[in-house]
Amino acid sequence: MSATLREVAERAGVSVRTVSNVVSGFALVAPETRARVQLALEELRYRPNAAARHLRGGRSGLVALVVPELSTPYFGELAGHFADEADARALMLLVQQTGGDPARERELLDGVRGQVVDGLIMSPWGLSPAELRRDPGAAPLVLLGEQDADGRLDHVVAGNVAAAREMTRHLLGLGRTRIAAIGPQPHLHNATAARRIEGYRQALAEAGLTPGPELEIPVDRLHRADGAVAMRHLLDSGTRCDAVFCFSDQLALGAMHAAVERGLRVPADLAVAGFDDIEDGRYANPPLTTISPDKAAIARAALDCLTTRLDRGAQESAPRTIVVRHRLEIRASTDAAAR
Image (cartoon, rainbow, N blue to C red; front, side, top):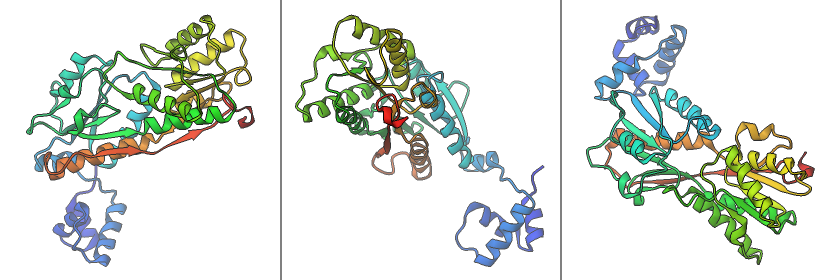
């Protein structure tokens, strides 16, 4: 059982109020007193009662993360980062998935059944910007991905245009000039794929190349099977290409499997690149070149936005858009020298 504030106070030789001030982060505590209390907290392994603290503040201490798919490695890894960040803030994280279904997203937007959540963080695929708008009295909502509710909500996003442009420039720099793009999803409200195709086209235009529609292969989902089907379609069509930029690592792994199945050598005959930097890609044969968004930074920024809204009031300040950093990870699937 965790020590009580009184036990810590007796160990440190101070009042219970002083211990409470240290635990709460109250600034006006003498440095030597703070150090003595902190030592006692550590020696007695004191853990604050988060539930009681939240209830005193009129909160449940529960926040919801709503994502399209937990079976997808990217969202699974992202949820892990959110769990770590929530724990660091003494919050409980409730994770829900929607499958990108608009009705399910709408249901969760109105509240998680049977739970009183202080706020939501959502990556919507099916709802339009108008449907994401909130009533003034609703729990705070932070959006992930490109769907930004017309700038009315806090929004955390990777720089998809810049990242896709950087990846395409990398492939062009290797002397590849017939670069296919696997991953457009015109059927979704989520504009992530649209931003990536925009960056891809920008890089080609900078190089004086005109992207042909035959090189842009749409998909229903971002899974391995969809990448394999798209790659086979590309090869069966007779369209010449020497590189493929896939809009997720899962698509890239499926595309690479289909290419090797047809006797192509990666990267000698066909360079293959992805997006997301999931663990599977690092252990593929050959390892997958990819865009690595900072997933930990996404979780940290989204929870910072949410807790700020909770502390200051949902309507206290203008909505923020936070673009997290990314890096290009060059591996052997595009550049044999990277091996």
